[in-house]
Length: 313
Image 1 (spheres, rainbow, N blue to C red):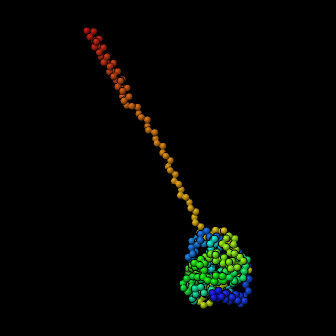
Image 2: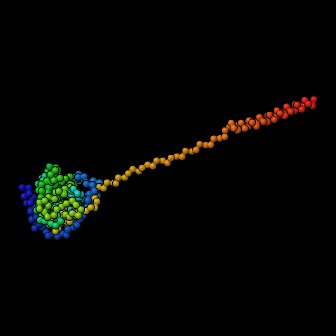
Image 3: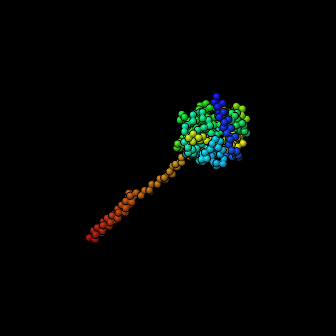
């Protein structure tokens, strides 16, 4: 039943093309860099998390296709950011919405209405739009009637995919009553389902992989719904080309450095002990001997004088 409803809603949107003015668009080629570190999925563009990511701005107005009604201020300030790694396609989408909706969309049911964003994905060689074997289409609401965001795939899985079954993830924050950010990832296993179901192109998370992605914004102003897309609506030939590359993006940890090794201080040479002074005894002994000789000589002289005097007498 969900699949029938999804296809019916999409058919109505396709029919809206016939009532719209002619739109011609030359696809733009983009490179999606590879995340060095996976971002934290919290609806906030943390410091460094999205550095060097691909940024696709919903401007200029000439590139925007107003599929349902129109709000000429809708694209200004709105940007889609993309990175990838071997596990997931990462996105962070900031919508500079200035209007407040009357209500939040029902969880999992408002596939093309309310405030939210979408992106559709073709493989590199084409396929039929709106057909589950060739076209994946994702809707993300920042807030639904149960207070949580949702992430729905329209044509292949036809169900919520931010769960344990399919492994996608989404988080959102509001900057005010209307402007918001959604952040999340979609595993490559989800993209692979179109190949398993008969699509001719296998989509993998490998460098060089090409995708055709259409960026869409849904805007509910009160009860008036607008829906715009960058490029053609459900038209492979007017859908931008995205290529996965190895260019680094995201938070790059600082390289670890080894603590400097402290050099041991050079050994201090011990001073040689001072040479001992000549022994005092030796000097004293030599001085004593000289004195004794003098005394003996004096005594001898005195004795000699006495003897001589005795002889004279």
